[in-house]
Amino acid sequence: MIDFELSLELKNLQTRVRDFIANDIIPYEKDVRCERHGPTDELRLELVAKARAAGLLSAHMPVELGGLGLNHREKAIVFEEAGYSPLGPLAMNIGAPDEGNMHLLEVVANASQKERFLRRLASGEVRSCFAMTEPDGGAGSDPSMLKTSATQVGDQFRIDGVKWFITGAAGAQFCIIMAKHADGEHVGKASMFLSEMSAPGIRVERMMNTLDSLNPGGHCVVRIEGLLVNASDVLGELGQGFRYAQVRLAPARLTHCMRWLGAARRAHDVATRYACTRSGFGKKMIEHEGIGFMLADNEMDLHISRLSTWNCAWALDQPEASRAISSITKIIVSEAVWRVADRSVQILGGQGTTDETIVARIFADMRAFRIYDGPSEVHRWSVAKQLARNA
Image (cartoon, rainbow, N blue to C red; front, side, top):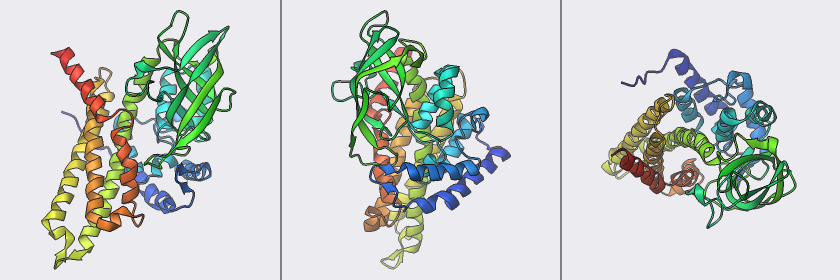
């Protein structure tokens, strides 16, 4: 039996985050610095300063790096509260891709790399990006199709390739690059490489126009030509890139669920308030079964999503956790919270399609969640393969 009861300490932390988001962050949602391709870095640093002053910055990081050292179960509570505003995870430095990159660096990086890259990322001083996904014919849901190459040149590696959908690349200070070895003893295997974005041979070619507008630096096409990376900037062991990708992606799928659960709850709250105050055909909207039933369905989807998220968080805190649990949770939560956002728009009617409320923005931002970090269909296929192996 899993104990979902929150400790008094965790309840107090939940309240602190909830109040911080309501009082310090939500007022910024109409700020002109929230642009088409995400908030500006000026706004990000202003929000980060507020989270730092509140003692809520990088809560998932160890205390020695300025965080609160939360485990997955504790993160589930804090990240949901942060996700109640699209700007919350950004302010608290727990949004994608930086949150996933911090986790990867904490687990895999050596002491020198942690000092050079992780410390300044955890402090909120800089942003980062993760370059794995490639255009058609390259790596996407199937990372084995990786085309970006790494060729050894003396004690360096030359990286060549094109990446796209690279979140936050514009304005990021450094990048974690996945590339496949073109020669040597690791030929055909992948490794991860750390590079400053200012290094010769790597450039942001363009921003892609996507539905969502959450992340500073947008989603970009990044061209890598003749980038030389020192052997000291190989992340972890050579040839272990695909394994490290799972080290990053499995928890990142879960933290996505945590944050989007908060956003879905916000959309539902807005829709509920509207239905309780708006009248039509002689009674409050919520008294009409068509509206009341949609809100009831929202409540059930939120409940299922929270239980799934907490269950996965509990499982990932165990050393023998199955990889399938994060795929199952990603499917359940991404599809359930999407239904919540969709119903909330429907309940608001025409107003739900405008920027008069936050719901339209949540709706647009959230649609990508069913695709990013693996579409539902790929995760279902992964679960089916696990079933076949265990049969």
